[in-house]
Length: 145
Length: 145
DNA sequence: CATTTGTTGACAAACTCACTTAACTATCAA
DNA sequence: TTGATAGTTAAGTGAGTTTGTCAACAAATG
Image (cartoon, rainbow over all chains, first blue to last red; front, side):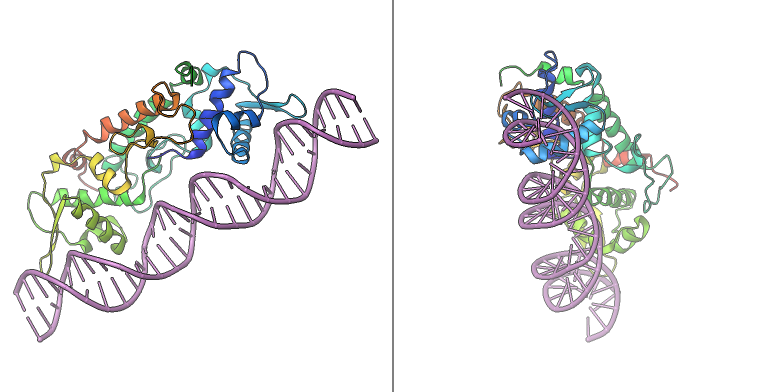
């Protein structure tokens, strides 16, 4: 049930960008990497994925960097983790954003599958939290590192 | 946030053993594998882990097999998944059964770490469901495959 | 004893994770 | 235009995990 380092780094990077959102200034990958202790080349891939997903804008050249292009209150942790790690559901057959039929389960497709009942509840709980937890909430707790 | 095939197979195997619990008869790995479409050698490893964890007993020779040694209502899905997949927490620093300090996070150890706040809530939600969901509940939904 | 079954341990292909390298392209300042 | 800065992209890599297989052995049953 773990999330990947990719998602963890992504959230920590977005934390930096959220804190800089008011000033609407660009933050360079270099600074993010230094403040959050993230390997810079790996961070690039992450920022790029978030950019392609429409959460960030970037600018090259001097004073370039990355910037949020949505309000922090309009981005949920659920969105971010889905972008970087894929679906939240513990198993494909209960995913709402990326459903996949089980192939080998004797209950396949049957709504009374016990695995689906249990894991469906877990999925709803996870999504219920992460989809209602915005970057603004996320950054709110975070003063004085 | 996925669970492994190992856990999924483990739960499906325990489903079979739960259904046979009333009769207190031994179920052979062969039958479990056939009914649940689980590779038999892989299933063995799983049953063995569950046996070492004290959930199952086994008997050799004719009419041998595996059997639950606790009431299905006394075994939670959370226990099973922890045995087969490790801690439920999405990240080590919020695990209650296997806490691990983050090494590279700038908030390491600080209770106001935003990652800990968010992921702690997720952990509690997952554990709240899986630790209160017994094998008896699990099997209850499951008739007529 | 013969048969059935469980136990152990080694092994391995396939895949994923967590990065790294290196060659690009775009922007800005001088 | 030139050079420095900074983001973009594709590809590769080493370590580790997942998902199994295989073979030999040990124990119980009839």
